[in-house]
Length: 355
Image (cartoon, rainbow, N blue to C red):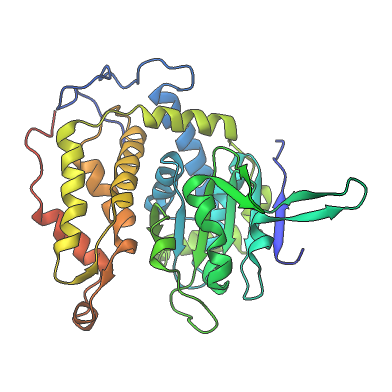
């Protein structure tokens, strides 16, 4: 089992201005009101910048992907990294995990992996005459699941309760997971032999999905110069910690979203359920994830209020992987990304959305 599950202990080691377009409780001066568990937005922006710069040492030339990963982290969500082999899926997950000084576990998903290998198992103690619970690798702040679609559906389902309720139930006993808690899973959508596609219920629990894509020639040349003789992950040091990230999340929770923008988010998600090309639209959970991600996007942009542009920025990563297209849409070479963009173009944007 040690060959498939690796655990690591904690290591030692665009700004916007102007007043909000809607009546808002926040001050509008770039800071959320004082709260014991929150930090000023300028501190959040500085911490996020340092984490992004750290990750970019490993994943060269992909700032948008890194930003979505940070948005997902601050939105208390989970990230699905889906792309072809060799573009840095696992490197992104491991670099983000190592940039934060907290507990990290890595699970290599294989067909023979069991649910108890993920959640943990109760072992009989002869001395006490009772069962002792041995926590699995899911008991960490950041859980990196490599090639998640190579495990059986039974093992994949072991993550359902963890991702949604932040707890694990084993033998009628429930154990709370550490906070913050984030699952970063990778999968290869091209090689289908020996894999099990994630069911809709599992995909819906991922806040966002990103595809890294191939780097441009300049970024790939820089990668060859810097990484060919040395793995930058080996020297990556944490630039933040779990306590700080938890406070950043509390700050994001306090970002204001006006009733008009909330209604706009609901309208966008509801519109996906009436598109002819879609057999299954986005769920109410998708609405919650869209709003949380928009709050994180606004905070990373230096604002304590959400504007429709924030929803537009995160809509495709948050919604596209949840949609199930019809056979006709596949035949017409329509993608879920195309459908989400068409919905954004069709749904009216609330008036007075700019300062």
